[in-house]
Length: 340
View 1: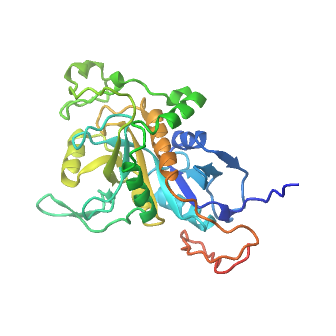
View 2 (view 1 turned 180 degrees about the vertical axis):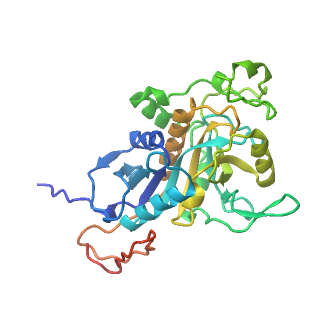
């Protein structure tokens, strides 16, 4: 008879944090298996999805309803790290607004935040110092992604056997379970000039279609994967002029609202699917597919990372873990040589 042991918090070595339920749902569609709930810290208010993804023990969650930005993200990340002390790193998986002036970024593409020059991969563009010359100076930096993930990224990029569309099988898996995550069609990927502003009184953008930017035609429909800098801040960017100014100044490929609150809490990599162009023409029609593309890349990347051998109940191991506490908590549990 096979002895099926119970899962514990020590079985989960990879975290996944999403901002929206549609982002987490895309991740859940790709899980290899799901697990029952485990006992977490009593002051942890997160709700978790547990299972395996590319053979890794995964703990996934998203921000509470109607909560956005870096502060909420930091709280969620701190509680996750407190309850799952064997977690080695976290993937921030979700959607973002693209900056098409830097690369040929299209809707549904994936942007992965990696170090560029002296910058760590993500910059908090609204945290710094304003000068009389109308310049903005950075006054701090965020942590780089873990080396194990940067190594896995280069392993993917240098793999000669990787198919031209490595995300397709995962995207099809998601769309088969939920058709709203299917590819819309490149005819719905429309970029307007930055001087073309969508007035709030206008029902849609049909009156601007004659002004759309003519871009190089793509002979394929799969997502392109871009690597570079991601902008993170506490406000939604709906201004093409501001988008391009920040993109030109820093080299940003996209804009999002959670990463800056998480990267200095726990080791993380940011993976974003592009759902709009950070301008006044924002809409939600690409959000589902963009979320699916980000989830697909997360699964692909984890397939390149060796599975961490977490301690099982009854084993004695030494784990190098930081204890992260949220304000007002007074919990500490040493894991040094502890039998679980």
